[in-house]
Length: 127
Image 1: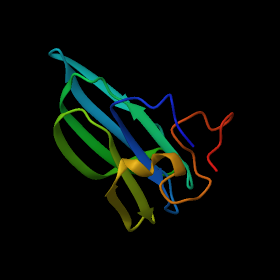
Image 2: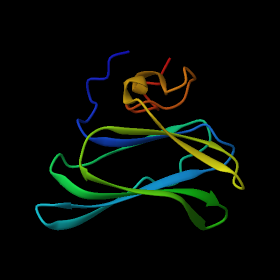
Image 3: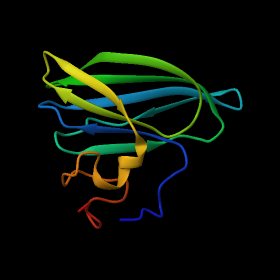
Image 4: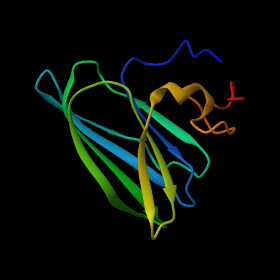
């Protein structure tokens, strides 16, 4: 499948674990602080959050979701500039794992399953 609506700079997290995950980004655009949050990503789905092409000093944090309301940080890193970055979350609430993966797998949900792709899942599911 060809995705014509794919943004040029984004962070994508695919959740193949047994619990919810989420991620946040703090960054600057022309000296102005910005913030983005993915919301909790259900098991077996992916979420893609675009980021401004001029974003700098990007702080990326991944959380595991401990219901009912607690997000526990499991990974934090910094990037100097924006570009596509993709991650695969696996494991359990007690033993979560995060792996950086190539973004070239974006059209097939990163694992060949029917997980959400970069386009609207309700009207254009991945196959």
